[in-house]
Length: 84
Image (cartoon, rainbow, N blue to C red; front, side, top):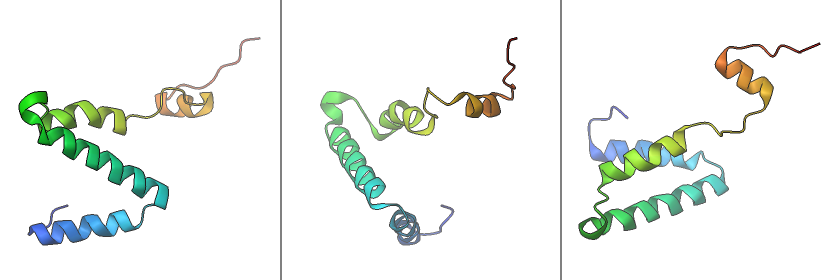
């Protein structure tokens, strides 16, 4: 995203979006539309783009809470030890 102009940045974003599966692209479009609608009502909601990012980004970027044990072990660096 280190593009010099707005047009280059938009072209790069469009290229990345074009590589998404159709279902993911549809979800992304709906999410961005919802966030745009919320930010348009900033006077009432006090949800600026920055506030929305703070609230939404951690939920989008964090892994699901219910990981399989083998994946969880890899993520935490702990091996699964069986109790005999």
